[in-house]
Length: 399
Image 1 (tube, rainbow, N blue to C red):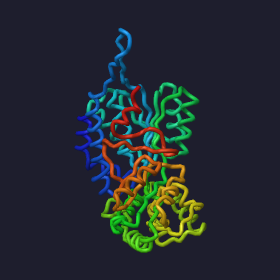
Image 2: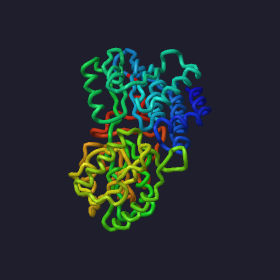
Image 3: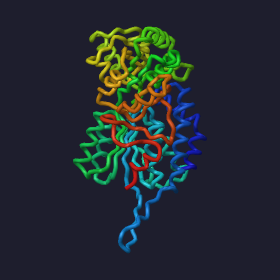
Image 4: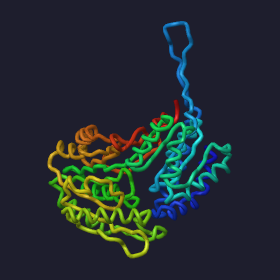
């Protein structure tokens, strides 16, 4: 695995260009985030390969008793199109480190970097059959993996709807183990004592990063009434400044991954207007070539509106006002998802109180989208089962 990580690093420029070509994210982010984080992830888990062990357990009789942590066997892994390279690393690295064989099903929209990974794995010396990459559609190739009686475990990242079908497939086949990292509608809470300019910039990043195509995007933004007007004015201005265009040029935002996704996002924007929210900026397609969507900001958003309840997966920010901390905690938790959240405050007491009260897997304080190989990531409620990353991920792949 160390050799594999080295090869990925040697081919960093190629992989970054493939990722941008495949997904549409700006090349800058492919170079500074997706590829280096992928390399780092494989190195991190390579370090775990010789550190897993069971325990010798003292018992009340004269017998010797011990436990083993053994690989599950054949692991099917199904990854999404929003971070193709990095999601492959999140799945493959821990599974391979503990001795499993993997069948990785890449998204039909973004197969290129996954297939290139397979070539580099062969060059690194992986034995035949250890790492297998499968391209194809979810309803055929993905379903076949989920139903296969010789697949011992499925790990899936994607929508909650598909995650439910994978759970059902497990029950209808061989009761294979399942781990799921699913959708989100994450809350971002800006308190009255927050640094407004910092919160504007970081909440902008929380939502608009990767064209808004992040499972943990801070898509429900609550701002305290004392700073609401100032915050909205600055958030709208920041969205207006966001550069959109060819991802191989110096821009902040490329196209949505597909025409289907662009139409879905524009459909949500239309619903927001129809249901009575105020669109402060954006709302349209950019040009007539490519799947570009204007950065869009809504205010006057109510809990019954589609843009408040549903995962949009696009560059659409919704800003709501709050006055009471307990009330905003209740509003943040009143959602079927529980993947992540962000809180901006200068009070340590507020930070601790809110982070402990929110029912989600990750809470960032005065920042957003900060990840580390050692930190587990996953959701509460309908945002999934199990954890990726860190030592917790190893539990997904051992028995």
